[in-house]
Image (cartoon, rainbow, N blue to C red; front, top):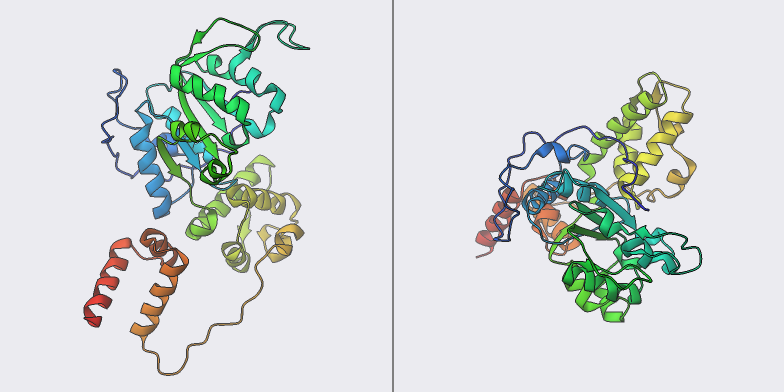
Length: 354
């Protein structure tokens, strides 16, 4: 039976000062929900990014409601940690949180793992087995990589979500299930719906509340926090003396694209800590795979003659907004300014042009 996977490393709490955002979506609450959200449940996530603060606010809002949540984001962005925070911050926290990763389950076993089976249902079914939905009774089921579930199983999952009953494979007796459902994917479900690879009705059933996690490259300010935490974590784990991080190495790590996001960064730091023969990590400790995937070097940027500081600022704002498809929150994060400051500069530009 798939169960909640191993903790991906305890993260330090950086969220204690955040204010609790009371749920305001009008969705039904469980009757026993009267407690404020405990920010300690977010303590596994290292961040002081404005983008992640938006995510944390959504987690606080949805934790106490019964709505299904769809968590999206690239691989390694921490989708399972968000699911765990939703579970731990809500009224079902005392119940189990059962995780099943559909990418790791063979198609032939997907329904058995989700809904259970009866003895003799198929070759190898030597006893009755409870599925993840029943195992999560009173708690939360986290269905990771939901985009890997094949269409025949999608239809049966839709029925469970609609009726809250499961029928074990090979059985004919329906069993009620009382669970909170959180699903996650790194695949574009909208495109999969258009191509016929994912049921449209199931997509809308899952996409009630959506939490989109930004990639690490959009929260570069978090990289030093993560690097220092992982260095301390692995030094303690492997009984190494405390290590420092060379400034040049930190600059390189901040500039790296990290296509595997936090998971890739974590593995990189672990490798450096394990293999280093010094108490200071430098560029010489960077794993070859990370070095080979580094961004190509760009020549130093030079301004044309005659540009004023105001013109340079406006050009930077314009280009950053274009790269962020007009998203002001993302653009402000890249420019390392607040959204309010960005809005003020845009308003000033409009006034000057009028």
